[in-house]
Image (cartoon, rainbow, N blue to C red; front, side, top):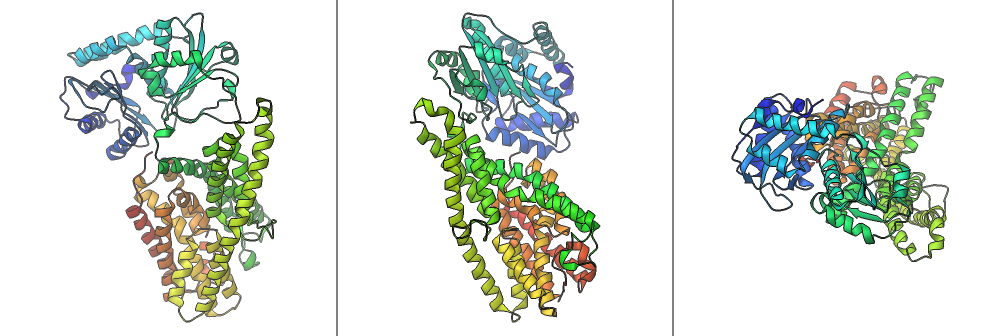
Length: 633
């Protein structure tokens, strides 16, 4: 495929006057829309602005390459504008931009188009070529210049390896892997050729690593330049002189990176991966969010896979055999319930482990896993075998505590003799880390347990005198920590009331279950009605929560609550409280402790129970749309 195949002639405007950066973005997007490249203009613009929020895509030298990868893109394409007078696009060199390309990349599917588009990015590193594009008078001339330059590139295609006495290798990578990865590589290649340095570069693009370095090339290199804006595996560079930089450094000051390679320190791998070069410029809130999302994204498959298997168990089971054991009464149902429950069991360790890994890299992983497990089992000093689970809130604490402790421990261990370097990752880090996280979690779990006991006492004291307020409280508790101590306190109170075998007890159980069904259903509705409030991964997983909600698997909402607790949890609590109150007001009754929609046939006033569920879910959905902020995909 040729680059020009991605550029519709009607998607090019020459000799344009642009007011500012926003005007440039709007006009470039309008060109995409006019030739049918987009499914949703507003959604694609969000992706473009989200990328600009991370740093201007104007790389300097008069060039700007805004780009976005989004489900709103119908097909991979490029639009272009030339602006001889220039426009302030907040370029890194402070100069106006007069040549602007906007790349629209579809989400999912093959990324082969990105390899073709990467060629355009490298071509833009040629200042004389860019000058001819800006001076082009017709669209045909503009496209002809691109075709000619591409033919020259193809003639010199192959893995570039400039020759010279010194040998340096490099890796370039940016978060999206669309533009800066390849421009940084091209700038380094051009400078290496100019300086007479033997050079090879690996490009870690959106479609994967291109021209990967071999072990022999790394071994023979005098130094390594890592110009990356995301984490990469550093183990292959152990014992080599390494320069850490960003893609911006490589694009604008490649010569300085080669100079630093002369005196770079030798890198010793301790199980860690590189930090993004621009981490120091991130706010604390942004860093915490990044670590949190690393845990949530890894946890999501366990929640979805396990939850669906549990739902299948309810679907295949026979409620009449033993209502108290619904989901495991038949062998087939029990098989699905056991496998699904096993997957669920990994949920909290995975959450905590990958939060810790994001903070402290590999040394934090095992420590975070153990912390998440202890949050799940409820270990205490008096009963290390488990007694008072702190659930997903405890797992969040475990993840961050493990990560920051291990990060501190790594710095402390830097003063140890070089002879101990090999035992740090296999002995010192795991032994000290797991011991400390054990102490932390045994201290946290009893505090949560005391809160749990107090709440149970309050609920018992309310008795039957205030059923509607009790419904509000029970419903809200079911949505507070979704499987955690507060949720369990409400559920245990409901099952205890159920044991009384009277109408009030059955009403309490009904309020408990409907409160637990609301969070996943509300999440699923919100991802459909307010897609801009959720990440792409969250939107894709959203509809699965309909299944979990109808099966009374409240935990389906955990990844969403963990990602944005300050907005999501209050929204869900209100809706669940409303559903609990309505269930009480309608005098709905439930004689089963579990089952979701599968036990609705035995619910008293089943139609009104559905009404309570629908209203509560809708209330939470609307609050999510109101309170949650628009996310950056």
